[in-house]
Length: 207
Image (cartoon, rainbow, N blue to C red; front, side, top):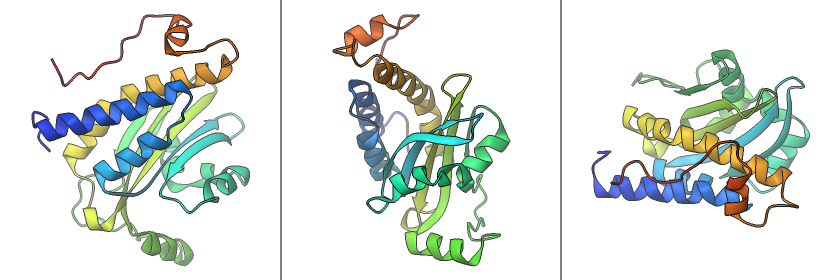
């Protein structure tokens, strides 16, 4: 995955485009679907957690059976997801993969029998996690479950996620503000005017 390659730049720009569609009130479904296709993921999800109450407020997902995400949120199961637990243990802001570059990594090690069955059935071989604080109260966690047909997550793919992370943070901030001000904000320009600082949205890979 050469960062100067035209296909890489095109994929990155498409991810940014789908990511910032969320600001228009469309949510993060299209971004999660696109990043699944780009990184060969079995599934991907984004959840917003009230850190003090350890309660999931809302989320988006791609690749999960229909109705599973609302059930996970309603039962507050998302905060017990392994990716969320690991993210909380690593601090307020992190980006990591389960395999961490180890070619012999086995995601099934240490899992319960029933969890192993679910992981095998889902075809998951690795996962990457992005987490950050949306504000002092709210924590955002994204989990990218890698399909076995794509192999373990490579360093170049973690570098792509590293490039995306500040944009994901910005998009989540703007989406949150759009939701809270939706009665008064009709379009993206008005939304940007509500920010306390100027913002520009562009691809840093293009001149």
